[in-house]
Image (cartoon, rainbow, N blue to C red; front, side):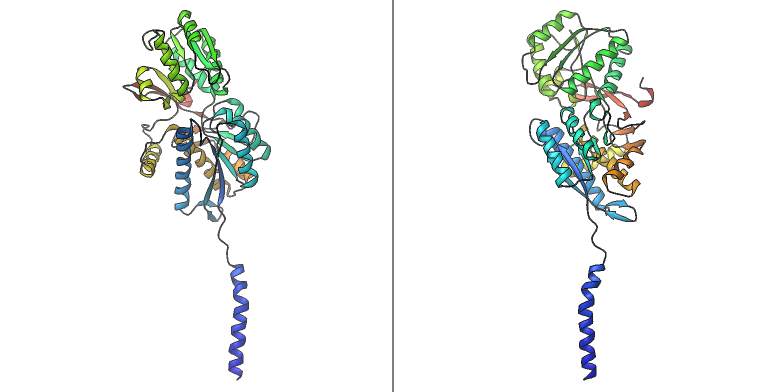
Length: 391
């Protein structure tokens, strides 16, 4: 009888203590919430949007398959929260606020175009959430801000380098510019190119503008033709470039024969027809899948295996933006926004898949710039200008 009573007592004790033991057992580690704000609808959805999402998901998947990021003495997996910026500032601001205040993300990446990145950066700065832009080049994106970074160069940086190159190496003295005055990106590149070109003794003989969604460029192109310019800088988006090339042909202006055409990184998205029209033309870019860099080639191979496509420049930049956040988390050993921001400020040099990125003393990096040339419809690396030799 006593033995029976003792057995019941022990069983009862175990039933009581078991839930308590379970309660004190280590809980499953929470995931690290990272926000991604990108154009998932509109004309940029299939380039800046889709490619960036794929690259971010690839980075997160690789980290999670290895057990997660090393945070102090434990590992935590990453969870991406992805929102569409609608390629519209108001939609982007609302989406950013959702990521920050509802999804409680620890950091933001994306903020692709300057017209989106500038207002969203203000929201992130006010909320004290670190954010890394993968494609915004306008200086205002990071100006006066402690929580905003980027992986791409700025308009003033690339404008200065490009003007210096065409003035001192190609020896052009008379140039023209046609740009969208309503776009922060287009206007910034145009103005910085103009300033540096004239500083170096060149002359901008036609500085022509248009406004977003304008489709008739004939008057501006006629003035450029009459100006005597030997080079035309077109810091515009593919849809605009295509229309401008068509109207140049209507006016009998042959690129490469009547005037040399110069472009920027948006040209990497031009279709084959426009690339053939621009045969021999130069443009700046900061990445190519042909770069002879072990990290680059490993990324290209992993991306191709995952998506059966070659990654674009924006994919490489996004992968590096996510990688910078990961490094800041692991080096600081914490996942809160302030610790991530502090971790980012301590990264002076980052060897990414898009190349070497140097942060001198702020969120704007110095980095290599590629001079690309269209040959047979393909963009070929013509020259790489490294940070140490950039004037």
